[in-house]
Length: 476
Image 1: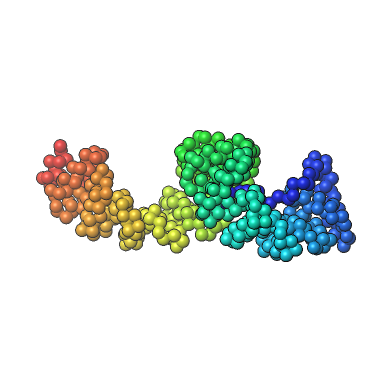
Image 2: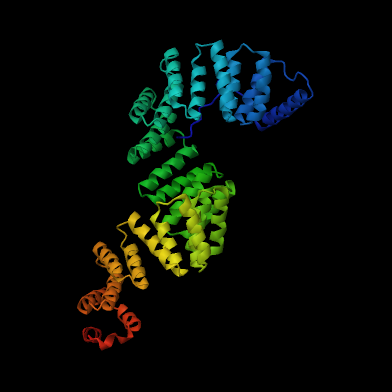
């Protein structure tokens, strides 16, 4: 869902926005709140209350706005507009049930006000009661056909319901009526993005930015689209524009870090993830990706700290258990690694890479039977993984299961006939099985693909030169 500022008070109130006026208003608010705490009447003028409420709302001081809205409904309990104002404040405080009660009361007082249905629809949309929201927007359009706010909110809800064609029809109608409707261009861009029509999405974001160049959300979304198109450098520029407008915007820092990570510019990625966490310290994906970046730099201790924090904030984040386990493995702390892999697999069992890591850790710990079961899970979940079939076959050979090892290694070769290690291990199996001619052919292929394997085979099978077929091969 796109970020769209639906909740605005009436535009006919034009407040003086000078710093001095803001300071004076803030002082007034504190005086009135103190009067209310002491049991005084506070403000008795409805017009003054409305002005203070609007000021608080504009400054996003919703708690203060609610204090005065409660007083306003006492003075004007039969005003639908008063109840609507309170509902809008509650909506922005995420107190959606209370907001709906206010809108319901307002509608009972004035069932012909289209704005009431629009604002109730926005709250219903916020709690994913999308069909009810859609009904409210349609009621507003019956009362006020062509209402731009009702139409665009209807389009946004249709997006959430994945009714993209209907949403696009509405947004194109709004643009046709007013080609400079920046909000409609933004929502149309977002709609195309959801439909994976990235070129169309980019074009719409560009048109929106031409009309509203200071919308950091638009620059950010444009960066996402450019990244999907593979234009990473321009995507970075777009994220930078978003951050120039709003420096404390964690998603832009995070995505910028992801671009640098994909370009293997790990140091730059680290700095971006750190900036993300500066503004949002509990951002689990940022902590996880920072851990990955430190792991890439072989800074395993810092990586472990990041993964541990990610787990602290989200105990179900199996990716961070996996990441921390990989660090422990790299530090030869295989018991700790295995514990993390097992925890991760409790949360996500259908992850072949996890089973692969678990198998390797079990092998390193001498848990050979367990590792065979884990390798078997890998090839069941990812049957085209030739390296997994090789490791499975090599482990079976190590355990003395020659026939099973030969089958696994043959499968690896079938999947990738250019992987020398599979041919090399198969040669060892065949040699032990005394199928010398077949072993020679497999070894020939392995040495052709990787001549360095010749010395390794000679070390592992010191008596091989006494075998006629191998002696001729090794001397050639």
